[in-house]
Amino acid sequence: MNQQNIEYLGVKIDISDIDIIECRLKRVNAPLCIQKLENSLPIISRVIKRNDKLIFNTNISCSRERAKSYFQKGDIAIDSSSGNITIYLKESASTSPENLLGNIDKLPDFSTIRLTAGIKLEKI
Image (cartoon, rainbow, N blue to C red; front, top):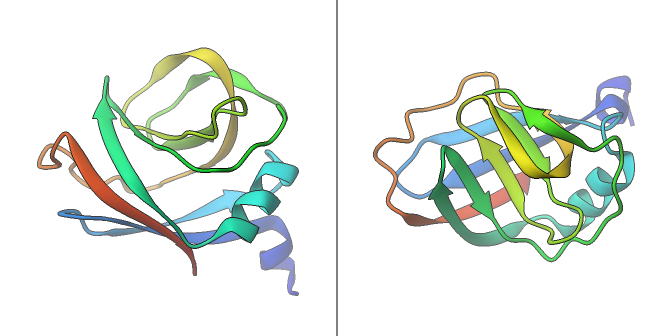
């Protein structure tokens, strides 16, 4: 395992009707959650667009690790109680603290996404 693999987990996010998004999850943010996420890949689910967020359900259960309640545009976070992963489309606050996993540098235009769409996460 090289230094890059130790620090980051490369993930490809494929949302129907949208381009494939590549991002790096920073292991230092939530090492146990990211390890559980990596072991669960690939994940296939439905994504819901609500309140400038994309939310999808996973079967990952993890504890809070450096949880925070305020997120920047492009942040990816997981709710430790429900296993829902959220992609923040603009700066916003969460009602409950979530574990920050990483950030998407270049967010595509999500205005064309339907209310719900298919999503697939897989390791790069």
